Structure formats: structure tokens, C-alpha cells
Amino acid sequence: MALTDQPLEFVPLRGLRFDNRFSSQLSADPEIENTVRQVQKSFFSRVQPTRTASPKLLATSKEVLDIVGISQSEASSEYFTQVFSGNALTDGMDPHAACYGGHQFGNWAGQLGDGRAINLGEVVGTEGEHLMLQLKGAGRTPYSRSGDGRAVLRSSIREFLCSEAMFHLGVPTTRALSLCTTGDQVMRDMFYDGNPAYETGAVVCRVAPSFIRFGNFEIFTSRGQIDELEKLLKFVIENHYPHLGEPSPETYVEFFREVAQTTAEMIAHWQRVGYVHGVMNTDNMSIHGLTIDYGPYGWIDNYDADWTPNTTDRAHRRYRFGNQPAVAQWNLAQLANALVPAVHEVDPLQTALDAFMPTFNSYWSEMMASKLGLSSLTNESAKELVTELFTLLDSAETDMTIFFRRLIDIDTSTDPELATTETILPLEEAYYKPSDFHGDTQGLILNWVKRYLQVSRISGIEADERAAMMKAANPKFVLRNYLAQLAIDAADNDDISMTHQLLDVLRNPYDEQPDYDHWASKRPDWARSRPGCSMLSCSS
Ligand code: AMP
Ligand code: MG
Image (cartoon, rainbow, N blue to C red):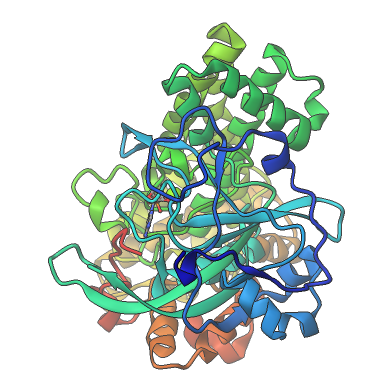
């Protein structure tokens, strides 16, 4: 037995209380060899993290430590680093990799599974809720296919920071507990251009009620394993959707309806904050309506509904910003198809699926009303205002985050007829080319702002209330692509301080935090075409 195959040592972490429902109630892969294979009729395979050379803890999220029940002092212990880099276990852990399939870029891809993620077990959190701890980048599993089971520092920093940033923005998401480097070197061909290089290996510990994806259901239906499909449904209803009642075909439909609804709400939030997931395959869709699997995601700098951060998606732009609602609906249709053999009929699932777009539209329109500081978008003039807003944002390179944030400073007591270039000055900062703001686009901006002032008047919201509503809907700070890249550049030079500072600032994304104004400014010119800032590959 090679050293790396030897069972991991157990070390104490007193705060954690385990109650492993997934791995105790569902059946495990009977094969215990950790070799790549098709795993049939099993929900997961037991597998230990692979030992790492010299793990080092780079960052933790204090809120997530609190939720899972680990004290700050325990988080500073050597044991913590050992456990959350995959070098040791603690009592109650039952490490395993889940089996799932998925549709990738619109095509059925067969078995995928946790190829580099290892679930450590479910803790009962300080609020009494069950939370699965999962290491991403912890080594090979039976689902690794041709991959090495590893993750690199750049993608791990991006996942760590973005999960936490999204949470504080109020966007449903999986969380990140910790970020460690492993001391191992990992070979990656970052741009798939035949230039592989060694990069620093890293592991993030993610936390969520579960990591069950649409693909966990799809794999069984695709193989005609209906008993397993029903067992998984029963497990999910009893443990994660108990309010729906006893498992039955009717509750399975209710479950689907709820997944569609929470997914609609999540996507509306993505559109609100300018987040582009980049790889919305059905294996990357959570049954809890949480943003999951931070890969080649990106943030909208200049508003562009056609933008996709993912270089692999450049040709067809399936995962472009403006297409996210439609893709979510398509993904939900795949989940509905997977549930048909357990529901026994198509119509109720179809009805629930048909409710997705109207539900999304109502969330979206509510959020857009808040972004504009209006009571609602129900009247025709408000609807037209929004249509014209997107025409305006398209007409010149305009920073989406800054535009909405600075809209707060437009003085809505101004008589629409008397609005001048002075009135629209707060918006100047949102324009990438000063010549746009001062030139051709100025007339369009002024016209739109006049309409805005009119609609705002009809809406009749008090100035203070309007400002508060807009401030809560329009973040000042988001994890701009170039900011994550700067934090990565520094970390590559052994300086993790920017990651810590970003984590801190992004805790309060709606607050002014004037000391960090420079992190709320437009993407600098150097970042326009720099890899990592404007385009990202799936290589991670
Ligand atoms: P993703 O594109 O990250 O959603 O991953 C798609 C599939 O590829 C999942 O089954 C992952 O577990 C697997 N995968 C991604 N990267 C690796 C890797 N480095 N080693 C093994 N499997 C991987
Ligand atoms: Mg994935």
C-alpha cells in the first residue's frame, strides 16, 4: 500500500457535530477501489481525500465558521488546516463522492459525478440546520474521468471570494468555509492552447444544505434505474423538503414546482447584480435554488446582454448574461423529464415548468422596480421606461453597477421639463468613454432621465425611501473580474492580503465604504482584454 493510500489520521475538531443523512440513508457504491468507472445504481462512492504535501491555510469566512460551529481559535489550529486541506479527518466524517450526470452545453454527457469534490459529511449547524461540508480539489474519485481531481489557486480564490460576495449581496448561494493551498503543483493548460504549466494547488471547503444537482436525478432516469430515482426523491422530500408532506407523485410535482420557483428567484438576483455563471450545465444546478460551482463566471462591467465570460462558450454564447433565464428554464425541463417516471404523468410537471417564466418575470420586475426606486413596474409608462433603459445602456459602453448606483443621486424633485445636463451629471462616471457622455449619447441620457423623472413622480415615493430602496438593490461593490484577478496575482506572489481585504469589503456591498472607492470604479483599461479579467476558461 502506497503512503497516499493509507487511511487518513483522525484529529479532533470539537465544534463539529455530524449527522450524515445522505451517506447513511442512501446506498453506497459496493466497489471500494478508487478507480475511474461507471458507477451503477449507487448514489455515491466512499473515497478519502488524497494527502497533500504541505497544506497552508490562507483564509476562512468567519460567518461560515460560526454557522458550522467552529470557533476562531479552533480555526487557527493545525488540525483545522489538516482537515480542510484533505490531510486528516475528524470524528463523524464519512467522506464520499456523489454520482450524477448532466447536460453540458445542451447535450447529454452521461455520468459526471464529483470528480474532484469530496463530501466530508453533514454537520448540524448552530441554527439546527444540516450542512454538508465539501472539499473541492481534494483528489481523484471514481468520477474523475481523465482529470486529476485537483484545483488550482486562481480558481479556488475565485470560488472562495465569489461565494461569500454573493451571499452578502443577498443572492442564494453555496458558502465557502476555508481556502488552503496544498503545497502540490498542479499542471494546467489554462487556455487550452497547448501550453500547460504548473500552478499552485488549492482546496476550498464549500458548505450547503446539500450538493444535490439536477444531474443526480437525470443519471438514474437516463439509465432506466427508476427505483433509485424514487429513493433519491424520497430522500430529498423527507430531508430537504419535509414541509411538502409524505413522498408521493404529487409531492414530487410540488418539489419540482419549488425548485422552479427558487431557481427563478436566484436568476432574477443574478440579473440584478450583473452575475454571469458561465457554465449553466444541469450538473451545475442546485435543487435548493443556490448558485453552485463557481467556474468561468464573470461580472458585467459594461452592460452587454450578449456577454459570456466562458471562452468555451464564445461561439454560441449559450450562457450569455441575457440568456440565463431561458437556460434555467431549459435546465428545469431536463429535471422535469427526469422526474416523469416517478410522477407517472407529464401534465402537472409541464404546468409547473410553464410557471417558471412568469415567476421569473415577476421577481425580475420587482427587483427592477427597486433598482429604479419605483413602487412597481405595472403601469405602461414604467414598462416603457425599462425598455428604453436597456436601449440606452446598449447605446454606449456603460458600467452597469455604477449606472444604477449613481442613479440614486439623480434629484427626482427636478421638474422633468427643466432637466439639464447638470441633472444627469451623477451618471457621467458610468461611461467608459467620456466622449459618449459628453457627445452623441448625452441627448439620449437626458431624454431618458426626463422620462425617469416623470415616472418617478407618478410613483410618488418619498426621497428618503427611494434612496434606501435603491441602495439596497444596487450594490456599490461587486467582485469585478479584474479585482479577483488582482487578488490572484498578489496571492501568486505569496501575498494573500488583497483576498482578505476583498472578503471584508464585499461583506457590506451596499455600504459606501469610501476608503475603498477605487474598488468600486470602472474596469481599468489594462483589464479590457487581459485573461482572467475579460475571458475565462473552464480550466481550473
Ligand atoms: P465542472 O465543469 O466544474 O462543472 O465539471 C464537470 C465535471 O468534470 C464534473 O464531473 C467534475 O467533477 C469534473 N471535473 C472538473 N475538473 C476536474 C478535475 N480537475 N479532475 C477531475 N474531475 C474534474
Ligand atoms: Mg460542476
